[in-house]
Length: 337
Figure 1 (cartoon, rainbow, N blue to C red):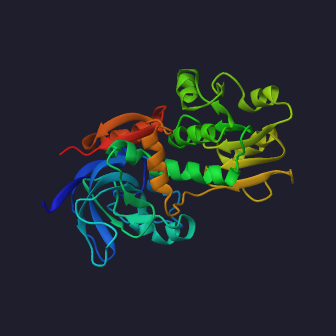
Figure 2: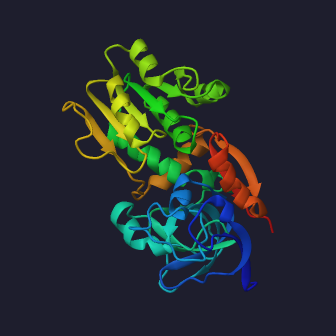
Figure 3: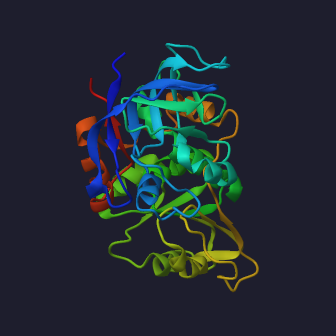
């Protein structure tokens, strides 16, 4: 094995413009860890939150920093005490940067910790349920697109306790989380109302949305209230900042639910209603969650929602595109060798 690898690297906090592809030492696994030759990695907004220092008080980075949480690849080396995986196993999953261990243990447990997935090799903790075997029928790019988005969607579905026939407004349906959540809601026999631009209407309808509100030409709150004067059963927010959720809560019926996946969460006491069930979720992996998501993808319940593919050399540009351009589904970086 070569002693160095190529990786997307940040040398300090800042914007995606600071990212570059550099040669880095290949990380080696310690006790309880596995080394993975990464085949595909997916971008997440959380990568950029960490890079910009928005979570530095609770999740400080160590530099040079390799971003990237979601990955798929092949085990190339195992550390002492690892029995769950063997060299040659195809795996996929997600992990927080190793330096943020205190934060991830407190808020996102039990995710693995990683040396950074946007690289040719990564090291991860082997015992976390957020890393698992990849089924042979699930290709690497689809597997890499699943973890954070899928685990977040599962948490939202569980938190919302959605029942067949209920109306659910999904704000931010075209992104990675929405591309998993909308099909799962449709399978749960919910009536899904998705927000999406006109160019994405066919996409979200294929995912399972029965109604679409074009957020570019209509006020979402006003339009949802016009269609459902008594309110929808639940709203899932995957896009709007906390200060917009007071208005959004007006679209929810009495006794309904508002679930939020955007951080930071609204301050306590933000809402004047005492009948509204509120929940802000963090990504978490229960044993079997990734396996369940992989099974649904194999069975066709979760359509492939990959917006664009990049080579590793274009990894910094992929992060710039995530910020500057409208994206549909997940952005995937393939490791070319």
